[in-house]
Image 1 (cartoon, one colour):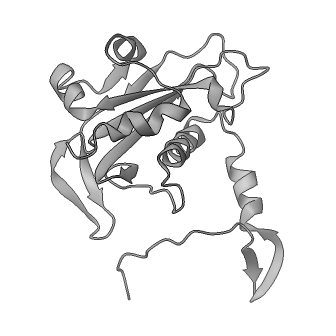
Image 2 (cartoon, rainbow, N blue to C red; image 1 turned 180 degrees about the vertical axis):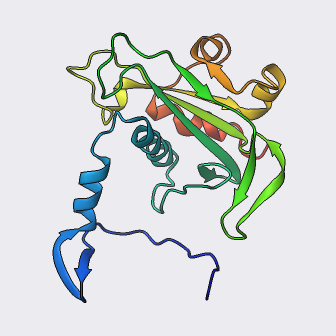
Image 3 (cartoon, rainbow, N blue to C red; image 1 turned 60 degrees about the horizontal axis):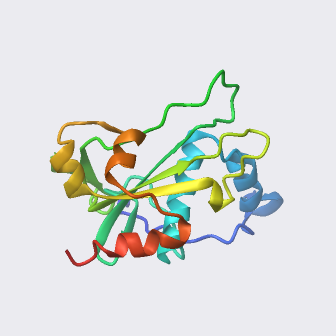
Length: 194
C-alpha cells in the first residue's frame, strides 16, 4: 500500500461524480455550492479569508492548504490568516465579540506526515481579517469593503503577548493600523526578507 503524500491538484469544478464508471448528474461545482455557500459560517469564512489574502498577494492560482504550518507562503515567508466577524449566519441576540486565535502550535508537515517538536507561532506574519459589517440585511462577505485587515508581525505578538492564545480587536487597534484589501500586499511585503 502506498501511503506517501499525494500532491493535490487544482480542480475546475466541472469534474463529474461517477457511478459504475458513468457520470451522474452532479459535478464538483455542485458539491462546492451545496457545501460552501454559507459564507458567514465560521469555518467557511476562515477559508474565504485565506482566499481573499492569497488573492491580494497574487498567490491564489494554486490550492489552499488544510493542515500546513501556516496558510500561505509569500516571498519566502509564512503567512497565517485568521478571521472573525460580528455577524454569524445563525440567530444572534447581539453581535459577536471579536478576537483572533494566535496560540502556539506544533507545525505539521503534510509531505512527511510528522509534527515539529517545537511549539511556537509558525508563521512570520499574521493577517487578521475582520468582516466588520454589522447589518444582517446587507452583509456580503464577497464585498471587500465590508472587511478590514490587520497585518501583524509574529515577533511583535511574541514580544507583547508571549503566552496569549487569543488577541483582542482592542489590542490590534492599539498597535496596528488596519488596511483595506488594496493595501494588503504592501503591508505584508514589508516583512519579506527580514
